[in-house]
Length: 480
Ligand code: NAD
Image (cartoon, rainbow, N blue to C red):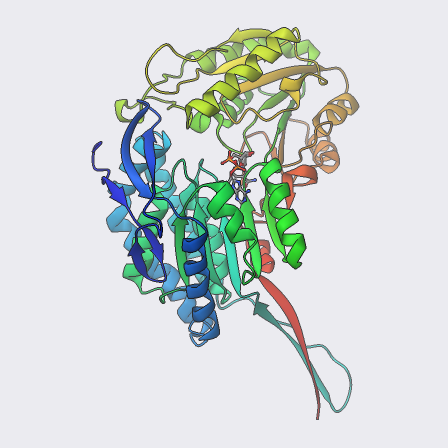
């Protein structure tokens, strides 16, 4: 037992805490030490079947739809309140299960509560339209839930990423089966405890941990599932979409990114370096919208690189329990992938300004890494590291910068650093990305729509737009 992490966790299916149908479990490894610290029931197709059956019964009973929208909103407020009492344990779990720093563990709880309160407040504000058709006819639209929403989340931020989709689904009257990530499932089980205590109806939410190829694949191809929300990699996303296509199921797809920050020559370079460094090194770069490429005007290239190197060097890397700035990456597999991509960069001729190799200590630690001399065609300029690795690419004209920024398969986020408002607008207008930040990274939050263009996916999470991905429009026409 590490800290306060429990030894064993059951799945939450149909309002009950249950072992896997076949009795298997998955070991939970602390990425800061590489040691097994706990175990979780390993759900498979039979467990998914049971969860979907419970979700089906709950949907058919109309238990959520019999509540008023305001009551469904109150339910979200109740879950948020229950999380207060679980915050210490969640933060502890995030440190050991996920490699987060303790302050980040607490921030994830606060962010989750924000999502619950934001969507709780929206529950009674999703309105239809009345459409004028002339004398003798009344016509109006209503938003119908899809039914059972299958949700799959990745390991980097399972709690807030899971909670925001669950909240959108429940307030619109859908029931949910969520497959939690096998590498870091624990915080979502504590979320399930909060839901249970807050009185979420039995079966309206099940949370099942299992391997992607088993439990994940069984869930997205289940015949009773009506809607899919997938957050993860492009490759897995494609297989989820193939399963969805078989049954013509609507999907919200939140996939990866290779987001570029464009730094023009008039930018405040201290501020820019601070924001870009935060954008790429926060949670060791394991954020889909990380600032993983910086495109810098050639005239200020060397000055900015030096400032970024200083920012990188100022970060302490180590276990979250030791109060370090940057924790480990999630697993040996992920660390090996990041290192292999770094080696490919060196082989292609890029130069390491710092980092590039794992730390020589137990656990999966990658130091802040910066590549210079990067050409847009190189693998490291196109492939997602999902780690603390920044590539710096020089440009000469704004047109050049746009071409390079838009030149990858991804289109999740982008940034612009300049004091010239016209240039900022000109650039934001031409960037193909779901979010654009000016003079900062991650401007926005729970309220601002988030999602991808191109291979970064489609549909939106966060903000009011997200709700429209959880409902379908029904038109009712009445001849009087
Ligand atoms: P992944 O695609 O390997 O796994 C994501 C989830 O899918 C996991 O729960 C996994 O078990 C499940 N899965 C795996 N195979 C499956 C299958 N055949 N059928 C159904 N489910 C399956 O991704 P990851 O490595 O866990 O996460 C990193 C990726 O997620 C990165 O590409 C990152 O950019 C992306 N991501 C995107 C966002 C976003 O909002 N756009 C947020 C976080 C992470």
